[in-house]
Length: 122
Image (cartoon, rainbow, N blue to C red):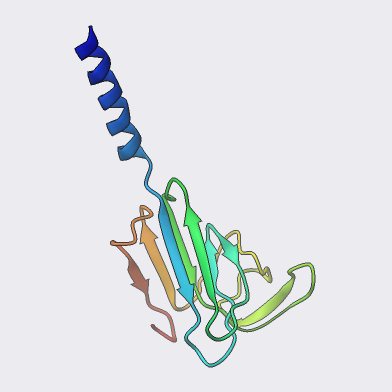
């Protein structure tokens, strides 16, 4: 009976470790100008030169898309526009349309990323 209890505990622990995969994206602005990175899921924010944005997904998304936006202006409510990479005039993106310089992480696995080409490819 004691062996059954240990086996059940071990099985539950293995199941826990197999189903929870945290993923961390660390986005750093190495450009000499301000960018407004966007991520779906994750939203978006302003990054001045040298600043970081860390996006942490506890369970790992099924898919993630990350891109940079430039020449943006937003009001205090997060509405505005960007010259490149705009997402329907929102600072915190909930979806995306055709944007250039997009990184797609299928299945939420950072070791399997794809750069999607645009007119200003990465």
